[in-house]
Image 1 (spheres, helix red, strand yellow):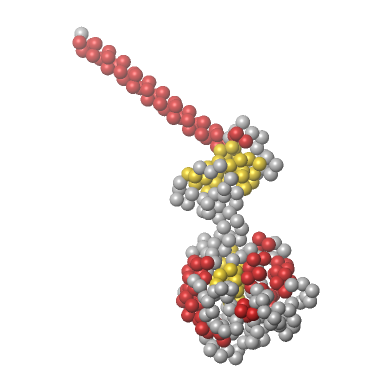
Image 2: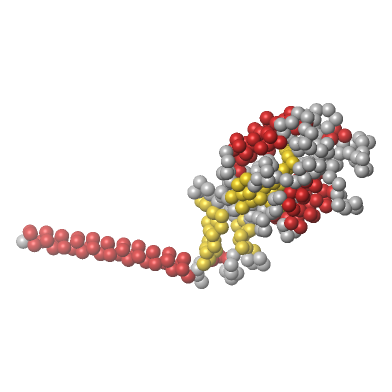
Length: 342
């Protein structure tokens, strides 16, 4: 009798456990089914907040006149830092090195019209090209005047032709101002140069950036020590062709082409963010493929490079069909936008 009672209790308990397992299974399957329905019935878009374009064309334009020999070691050291950081970008690049001389070099790449690519040659070997250009204490292989803008155009049109759709980055390193003769007698030489470079990139300003490394007004003098071009700013000194002697062409060029400037005598590789080559600001707006009738159906998730979910405020702009953040998601973060089914 006791055995029968015990068996009956055991049977009831077993049925209860089986019922619980069955119910749990149903709930789990139901949850999975709901998730699959949500993902399949709705739509989603995935973005990565990245400033590094997949390909780059980079042209270095170096002042190789005699005074630059005094900063040879410094420029080589900074160039190594640049190349190390450039090799760390996720994309690929082509790189050319030319001089500001149009008397003899006239835009040709050094050495021997070599186009460098990512991870070709060691950092030391590539930086040595800079050293070779600045090796002459008395340089009889270059003209007396700095003509970097004219040399750049010659290089871009003959030796380092920009690729279609690929961002072009120009880097000018000098201790003096530019003395190129403009093709236009009525326009500012810097504006003329900008127009000519933009024409090579389909007049798309997002595809060109210029960075200038030069003397700053109150900075040190490490190449030309006395009577540098910048020291004639605000004086009555004029150029042989007329106009003020110092026209600050390289720094103005960097500003017009949305680049950065740095002092030649400083640790300029850390002042100019060439590793990111910031061709545009971090985006706050992300366009969806189809309009959203009910913004409450949107689910937006932002995950940082450290795999942390970020809590960022956002709104939906129906006029442009975009999700708009109050502050831009940080670089490297991923943005997933889900549209729930009706």
